[in-house]
Length: 441
Image (tube, rainbow, N blue to C red; front, side):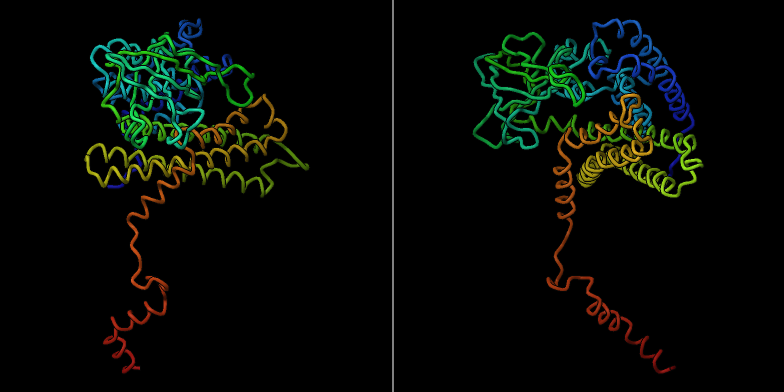
């Protein structure tokens, strides 16, 4: 049946999380605004502030909620996770405090599915406990959205893999205990069948940081997105995750969920912008009266609320599609989930940009200043239009999946909805009844 309610027990958990994030976690964004700071496990901030906050989350049973119960999570499913993430997305530190931060969440799933027992003990357990962070390295300077441009290779040499090449925008590398990298292991077949995943521990000889890259607005030369170079970098043969040539299939273990989680947290950012917009409208006066008296301003508020509600329901529906696919295992349901994930991914950046722009505009010069968080919010729109595959790629996925179900019309020129043709068919269908009607008239 159709139901938009939340179970009372879980709603109580959400209410606690909402209060906790607003009162305890959001202040960290102001005190420590650097984008890499949440990932530094050696900092005093982590020991003195983050660890105690994480302990409170554990007490509530909300730690690493994206994971299955056997890995220490709640196994709540994607709909429940969406409802939680639209709270956590309010601030930068919240995912770390709740143990759901990227790329660690996706890397944990890869290790859980494909790591050996020894690897899970050495790398997965401290990752799940929040004692370490990790890096996922896929994009290269020569290829991002087009994996056909990947050139970073690994060659088998006895009991080792030897890696040579470069990786770009490997997030959080400066603090990572290990890197999971996609590398070409068979250059003689298409890249989707010739790439594999390798686990590379921190400090492995031959893996170097060329430089750290930040986002726009961060100082040049600083940032948590690593430009990595591999030169004769050797790792044991057992560091291969999964089967050779299955790198892209393994990547989907993390990428599909990650795309959905970005959208969930974007709902929270947009909700925060809506709060700021509403507050501004009822607080500010212009031309001798409150800003709320201006019809154009009210129109912008209405457009924002409508757009956000549409997007939120789209995200929740996509999450439901994923839960259904996981529950049934049916191919048709998996296809529907893929369709909805790509559609949500394509809708996310525009929603963020639209809502952020209206909010910035209503705040005037204050909106574009560094005294409000709005410009960082706006920047997240274009960023998410690139992360985990550009918007155009996901629109193409949506179109291709839709076209798989489309059938050409019998009449290739006029089509199935041609009014004269359908009118003639309707007259034939009801010919007897129409004749009786005409006779009575």
